[in-house]
Amino acid sequence: MTAVAFHFNAPDKMAYACRLLRKAVGNGSKVVVTAEAGALKQLDALLWTFSQLDFVPHALQSGDAGVVAASPVILSESVADAPHQQVLLNLGPQVPEGFERFERLIEVVSLDEGDRQLARSRWKHYADLGFTMTRHDLNLKGAN
Image 1 (tube, rainbow, N blue to C red):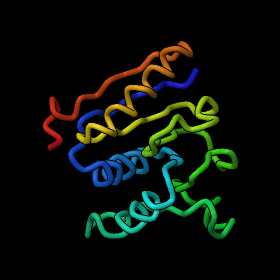
Image 2: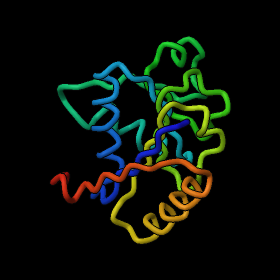
Image 3: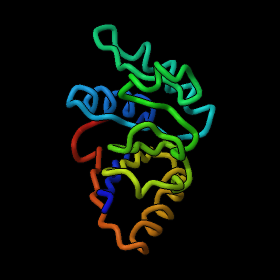
């Protein structure tokens, strides 16, 4: 069964996602990031610029097939044709269709009240399906 983790209170959702992806790739994980097109474009740009010392190899799912196959991080609006199914990072507002095929699902939730409300709905959805969630409160960890 997919392990579901919510990372709450991210002061900057995209910057946190960049750090999370850097850590995941450093640990050898393969990650699919799902979000709406605009957010994926923003994340793509940030992954090139968020650190002068680190590079997080990534590709848009719609890109060159060879590059996508070789990339540990795939940015995609849908997980239907994901080349790997280890970790799914959801930055979107909805439950990603097909999430249960992944070993792990990570939900990042910002401080925005609208984002928090949508996250509560996703939490309830996963709980109703019988998934056990882990909660990571970033305020308690000093991630501000």
